[in-house]
Length: 228
Image 1 (cartoon, helix red, strand yellow):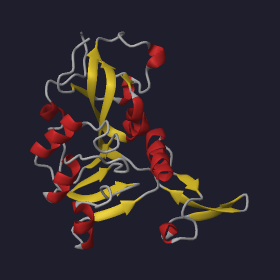
Image 2 (cartoon, one colour; image 1 turned 90 degrees about the vertical axis):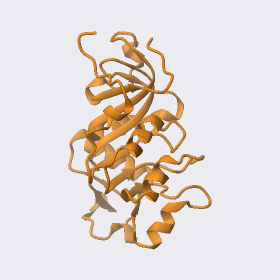
Image 3 (cartoon, rainbow, N blue to C red; image 1 turned 30 degrees about the vertical axis):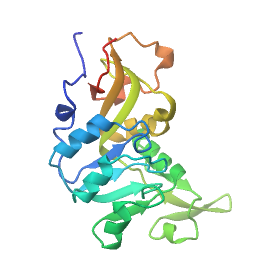
Image 4 (cartoon, helix red, strand yellow; image 1 turned 60 degrees about the vertical axis):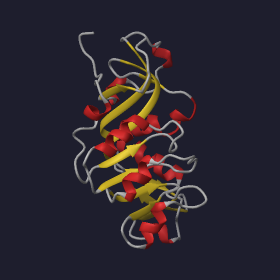
């Protein structure tokens, strides 16, 4: 292959994550999360991180909570920022003032990420109008209905997982992987993908590609993933 975005190790793929970075994490916690990339981030020394993720289907993942417990996350942005029924370590640190928690509805988060990927200045939505969530936001009436401006959510890195990739970064998702990954891939300066299968360019039917390779910067094989 003359040109490839394939990295040899997960650690190399996240080696330049800096202090203060904003990181989008695809999947719903452990369900289709990029577990190898998150483990590599744990081994990395970056701190003061902002993590954007969705814990609504949390089923036991310890990677992001471990980053939080180790004091390396300063802010969580999520539609569901606490872990399951017990909440985990995040609400404990939030109550102590050691971490900032920003709750954002699913649809609002999706639109903010989409705006970042599309390069537009934001979107006017009706969610949160007349509540504390519209404080300090621009508002206007559109067709007689109140709206507030939600600004783009741009990130330094997106850590994603896909079912299949080729060497130039075209991606195919399976099941819940598609939920956040396709919009997150467009909203980050550097998109890093952990793939269950990796093939040569042309191995994926173009009609099946969900995220085109133009949005993907780095690819690494998931543990045990074959080259096909």
